[in-house]
Every structure is written in structure tokens, then in C-alpha cells.
Length: 137
Length: 389
Image 1 (cartoon, one colour):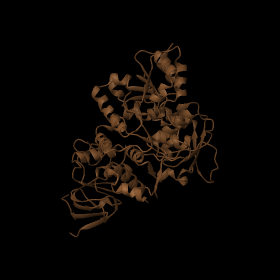
Image 2: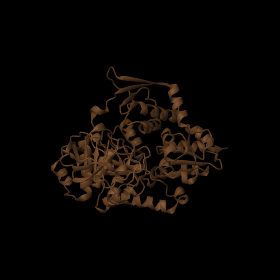
Image 3: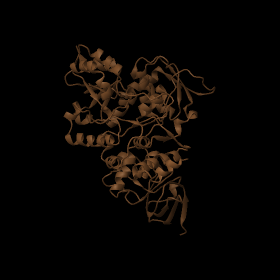
Image 4: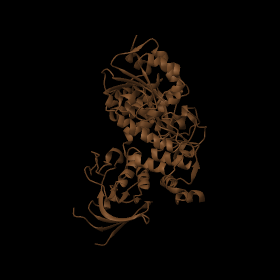
């Protein structure tokens, strides 16, 4: 396939290549992700039970307490953080979390173009998300 | 967003990691919300203190900041913690108390005042028209609406970053055009007590979203009533200020009418039970000296009923200045707890299942944060329920 390239806005610079994990719903990192193992625990989340470690984590935006920023830092310290964060509209909680945890982040991306399982390359400095290979789904 | 040469140096790491990460937070938030530059602040107020709500996740970050030499550049106060140093410390698990102390220690290392209060303005009022960076939504609304200071609703991390840099990005309510009233609110009922003012806040927060209201007929409201109104408004809405004084309004402003029935129904909805409370709680937001005096007067010659807890929450600063009234309240069997907030404390571990309060904000949050049933009623009714004699 020809690579699909999506263009967005740089929030935190960085490059990586990994499998995408895509949610249709917003997420609260405080209370919604277990800082001990990186699993999503928020019952209303469509990815409840899934682990965000080493994924290109795509979701519309965050919600909930600003303590959520610290959860992203704690995950990164334990090597449980996503490789990159892709949002439709960045919100302060996730932005601050990505900065302090140094996770590459882009927003203003049409995340519906990306499917869970896709192999994705992110160049956050350029604000680019490249879909290299569609996953099996 | 424009950064000066010095700010850019800090952004690039010239002043070390701690200052760099704080500058990056401010610069990115500024970009996100279309700020044009950073502006100096006269104070910061940091939330995210209670170990109950924080858990372990932030400890490492706070410790790393303190290790790398982060220091508050402006006067910085701290929100309440999960317990007080006297009464609750004795009742709770030692491990919880130690974790909480460890968090406080990190803030102390950054020269942040251990004010432990959601009403930092009782310690020191910001000058009218000065820019500040406060977290704690109830204090944000009070600062903007009653004290005339200018602050966005910061989160814990952004208030901390602003404290270390001494500046904040000039977006949102730091701009005069965003402080203009967008909705005119007419309340067709005389509000009789602080609980009714709180109920008005809960009701309006839900329908205003982020539109700044001008609320008519607030001229005679006391500061404690406005404190309840603002705290409740911030609980259900995103709005960070209200106008209560007569001001010249643009024509054609959207109008909202609030009826007596709306206030009544809001209070009824915030009361989830009619059974007897285990805890009667006053002090959300934290009590002022005059509120503690009023409580002491009402408690005179009375005794708290057995099987009930009666808590009054305030800052250590105010408690130290209210010694005579504290004595009266404690003689009656009540407890004046310093530096703690009931909704971020471990009430469920103490067997508290039903909380009666005069605070609409507490009644709104307690079912989820404290897993408690609630009864919302004005101060005098709370004291009648709590005491005999």
C-alpha cells in the first residue's frame, strides 16, 4: 500500500514507530489508567483492559483531574508509557503529562483514519503520522 | 507564543532541568491557548496535595523537581491535605500519614508555604487587578469575582510551573475581553442562607458552561455567601468568574431566569438521604475567622450528640487566630481540623457513611469522592442536628 500521511500540530517533538491503539472515547489518566501496569481501567472506555505500553496511543482528548499529568510521568518512569500520543484536540492535562514524561505528541489529527493494530510511524517535530501497514482487523 | 531571550534560554535548559520543564509547560500551554507572551504573577496556589487523590504517581515527579533545585519564585501557597496533624493523624493508618508527609516535604523543599488551605486569600489577599496563577477552582472564582485578581483555573502541574518561573501565559481570563459578562442572570427569589447561594452556583454551573455571568441583586450578599456561590459554580461548570456588582451591560445579552423552585430542587437533589448523619461538616471552602466565631456562638452551651462527629475545617493560620472559639467548639465535642479537606480525606476509612453539610460543593462531590450519602442544609440546621442542650 502507499503510506497514508496525516498532518497535525507538534506538541512534543520525537520520532518512533509502533503499533497503534485507537480509542473513540476520551480518557482520564487519573483513575482511568493503572500506573502499576499501564492498563486502562476506566469502565466507560472502549479500550478498558488494554495496555498502553509502547503503543502509539490515539484518542480524541483527555478529561478529568490535572493529577492525570503526573500519571503519565509515573508510567514513563516504569517504562509503561505509550511511545507517542496522537489526539484530535489536545487538552492541558495530557499536554502537560506528555511534556514532563517526554512522550512525543501530535494533535489536530483525524484519528479515525488510524485503526488499532496499524503499524504507524510518528515524526512529531514535523507533526506527521504515517500509516505504514494496516493491521489485521 | 513570544519568549524573551532569557525565557528562551530557560526553555533550552540553561537553568537546569527543573526550570526547563516548568518553562516548557508554560510555553506549550501558552501555544495551545493562543497566548502572546508570559506575564509576571504576584502569587501562585498549588493543588494536588492530598495523598488520597494523588496516589503514588506524582511523588516521583515532585521529588525530581525538588532534587533538581526547583524553587518557588513568587509567594506560593498549597491546597489542603488528606488529614490534620492532630485528630485524624491519630485515627488513620501510619503508612498513609507517612506518604502524605513525604508529599508535603517535597513542596517544602521547593519553598512552598505549607498553608494547606483552599482559601489562601485569608492568609494574604492578592492586590486587585494583579495577575496570579491559582489552582483550586473555588479560590479561582473567588479571586476573580470577589477580590478582583486575575487568574485562569490552573491545574496542579501548571500552577507549580508558574510558581517556579514566576510567570504565566496571558490567555483566557488574563485578558480583559474574556472577563466581560456574556449572560445576565436574574434570580427571582431572595436567597436566605449560604446553602441557597451554593445551590444557585450548582444550578448555574450546569447551564452556563464557560460563559461569564452577571448575576443581579448580589450587592447585599456576604463574602461567605459569595464564597459558597463560587465554589459550587466551579464544581459543575467551567466558568471562572461571575459579576455581582451593578455594571453597565451590553444590550441584547442572553438572559437566564432562576426561580425559587430551581433552588429548592437543587438542594433536594444534593441531599441523597433523610437518615441520620455520621458526620456534620462545616468548612468547604475553609472557614474564615468570622465563620468560626459564628459557629462557636451557635455551639454555646450545647453538646455534640454521641455517635456523631462534628468537624469544622480551616487553615492552621486561621485556627491559630481563633483560639477562643476553637476552645468553645471543642468543649462542645466538635473538632476544628486544620489543613485538611473532608472531600479529599479518608472519611470512608473512619466508617462515615452519611455526611451533613452546609456546602453545596461538598454535597456535590461526597457521593463519588467519599462514597457517602449526603444531606445539604444551612449552618443553623446542621448545628441543630449535631447537638443537644
